[in-house]
Length: 59
Image (cartoon, rainbow, N blue to C red):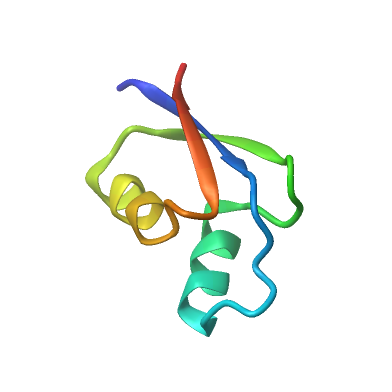
């Protein structure tokens, strides 16, 4: 499967709890941190929930 890189670009402070949990589930803790995931529907749905906090790049 294809890989996708996810980078946190905005803070999770003052965000709803479900968005904080989604970032944690993606493995993101700090601004600027980059993680790589498989390009699955589950991951894409999680990215879509926090698309205003992250940037993505196809690897």
